[in-house]
Amino acid sequence: MKRITGGFLLTLLLAAPLAAQQPQPKPAAQDEFVPVSQPLSPQDTIPAPRLVATAYGFIWVLLLGYVWSVRSRLTKVEREMATLSQRVSAGDRTR
Image (tube, rainbow, N blue to C red):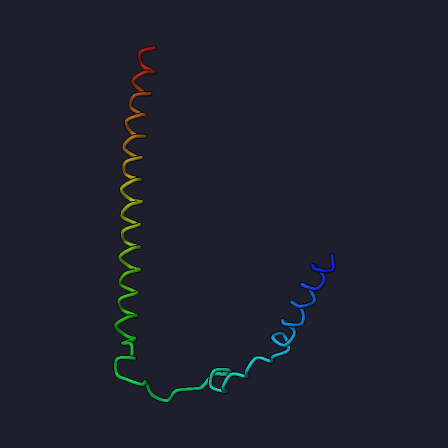
């Protein structure tokens, strides 16, 4: 038992200096926001109007595709309902 207690005490004594070390402070530029007046290189700029127009175009294509899909499915359901209505009407006449 003394051997386990001695090993534990030795571990605490060796780890104490490591725990007592204070972390190094970061430089001020990393701690807070530093505004940049101009991009560092021309490659860092993004053409905003082209990106916005592309995004709007993409959304419109998706919206029109969705509307077309709903319309085609609704047309199919209406045809099936008309066929079913004709079958029911024909069945009532035979009785």
